[in-house]
Length: 353
Ligand code: NAD
Image (tube, helix red, strand yellow):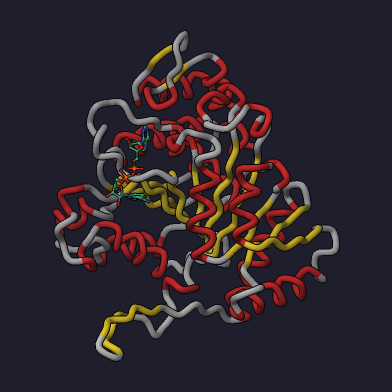
């Protein structure tokens, strides 16, 4: 296995060390891999002037999977948009053609009090959100701000081709097959033609997956249902814009941003794996960051790119056990629990592994 590692900025380097320790344990169990370190984001800007330099591009293209910490920080906010760390993220997604973003939203039983929702609404929560990542209104042309009739107007284009819709649909149907065989597609077909096509293509592809039950929901209703009765969902598939908003809403059902991993995949299961949170500059360098989202991103990598289901579940069980034993970083701490730092949480997970 060839894995590129980009620690990034802020808490990125601290949490990625814990992910590497987990991989090293698996190495002693017989998994064989090469790790190559590279620069992406603000650290790359500091070193080369570019957020996604050529050397990083080459490493990413040569690797089978990429592990990323997080990028960004206030010191880069004054840079031009194309030189900012976050631009490195968009560039790597584009360079690797990572069109499918997978975000599992699961709630660990021991963290039930971290959520703002009532325990009975979220106990046992387990949703997978599949978001299209390289199309939609974020990339559609024409776009811009211009003068018309003596005032400025802003405009963007919501656009999806059948090919773009069908490739993300296949990812979602296949994911549903590995879970509870239910897929809910989210659109706004009552108002937007683009999403009428989305629904038509989903219905067409559903014929190839008779074992998966497909349903459709309008995005406004979906936003409401996610907080009203989130456990009704198994797999959700949606476009880039709706997915951006709904996946953040859904992640907050669990109340703990430091716990959730994500995967962005191409059409051959090559992937970039990262926590959903950012670089948390407010706690960087203080041994306070929760490394579990990063460690769970390693589990996703083993599952989706390398097809190593048993190693993936082994990591997930170790995390579960660690939480059950009461280990907590500051972000998920409750009175009576054992407070640990980033490295301490890593130690506890390693013992359980
Ligand atoms: P953030 O996710 O970095 O932090 C939000 C809050 O959550 C902060 O209080 C932070 O301390 C806390 N937090 C986040 N991760 C945590 C963890 N693992 N353990 C404990 N607490 C954690 O979001 P932000 O503050 O809006 O953004 C900071 C920087 O990160 C910005 O430059 C932003 O552009 C960037 N960002 C990067 C990514 C990415 O790399 N994929 C994603 C989001 C934001």
